[in-house]
Amino acid sequence: MRSVPAVCMAIAAAALVSLAAAAPVASPDPNTIGRPPVTSWPTYNGDYTGQRYSTLTRITPANVSRIAQQWVYQITSVGAQRGAPVPVIKCTPLLVGGVLYITIPDHVWALDAHTGRELWHYEWVDHGGHLIGQRGVAIWRTTVYFLTPDNWLIALNATTGKELWRKNYADARKQYFSTSAPLVVKNHVIVGVGGDAMDMPGFLDSFDPATGRLQWTWWSTPRKDDPALKTWPNEAASEHGGGMTWMPGTYDPKLNLLFWPTGNTNPVFAGQGRPGANLWTESIVALDLDTGRLKWYFQVSPHDTHDFDNTTAPILIDKVVDGKPRRLVSQAARNGFFVTLDRVTGKYLVVRPFVPLDYSSGLSPQGEPIPIPDKDPTVGGSINIVNATNWFAPAYSPKTGLFYVNSVEGKAIYYLVDDSDHPSGYGGTGAGIGHTRRILQAIDPLTGRAVWTHEYPNLNNAPPTTGPALLTTASNLVITGDDQKNLIIFSADKGRILWHQEVAANESGGIITYMLDGRQWILFSAGDSLYAYSLPR
Image (tube, rainbow, N blue to C red):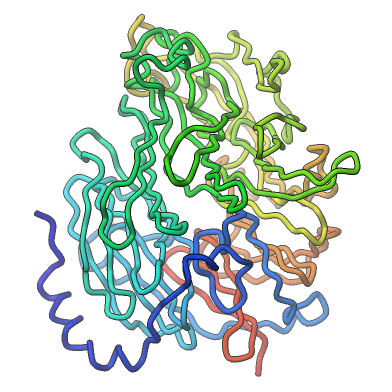
């Protein structure tokens, strides 16, 4: 049985009295945490839209040059104690009641947002989980929810860090692992799972936030008698088909629909053993919040053979189209296509490449890209694009009407290493070749065309990676970073650089902003450190 080390429990107990006075009790109303964040950042994307947009205007283009570092919190000691590599903070911090909550695999910290002082630290001893990253926690009333690498949902007291209950939802022995932040919506804690290339089906679970009781499960590949099985060669292939759900989705309260991105198909590079579109991998799916029932889907990468995990956030956008208000959802997918869909019906308005690509022969009547088989991995090697973007959060500004994404233009060579009729696992490999371009794009979601771009310098031909996350504000700011350890603030309308500063490592998690003590703060992680910036008093 998993347990918190005794020393951690002792520390927590000894500090209980002082913590009660120092840390306000987190108590976000489940019915209001989906509103635009101001004095809090209570969920992964700030609200349910995925826009990562703040209505705050204290920091502006006119005064942003004056922001300065207020404090830094560093967690290097965790790796040093175990002789492990320096940990990287990949989470989006949450802020509720003046307390920040941050994570790395197996660890949760609560910090005083005024000073960065540690209030409590929870440590988990996992058994078999993959320690590749952890994206953060969720909060419901006075409870913090945390996913462990070996697939336990842990409920913690938000004030003390004391464990309240735990629920195991996937078997680590089957190579499931968890890196996601849970999503709390009304009386549901929605939990996704990872597994990459281990020939297991992906799924979403919904749990009761008070008791941990399982409410529903949605599988990302079809079960017996489902008509979608025709997109697989047989039921066995579907049951081992992947489609992991390892990044948080978004939610429309008026439609009561979750919009979730699903991951790569298995076997990853070897598609000869799974002819067909392979639903519902590499898709955006719309699920009823209360039942988990599928309402519609749009498959961004039918029959993917290039590990184009479709896990970037689907952002909810309201627009007027042809004189009528439309409820839309947009995504800049890792396969290089930008899509805008009607989020009521799933019908497409826009499907357009946002990086140069040549692996698609056109679109199906449903607007889904048609892959060219000659671009599949081969034993001798086949050239295709690198991932056009990755899991780092994009953003949208209602002020400018633009969708912001960090992208990569470049090529990779893909090899098929298992050419049998029944491949397993990855079945192949891919690696970047040649020079790549890293470009911040501001895209009009009604056309899929970039209104402005900024190309980052590619020093020393760095590996073809993307990131980091983005944040927009009502004062015409876009906040992000490059892969040269710089935090950069742009004007949202034109892409003009307003401010930048080098830190100790590349920005690695999600950027947030909030009001505290009458000041607007900008908070971000880079490597093993959390940085807080604000205007001087």
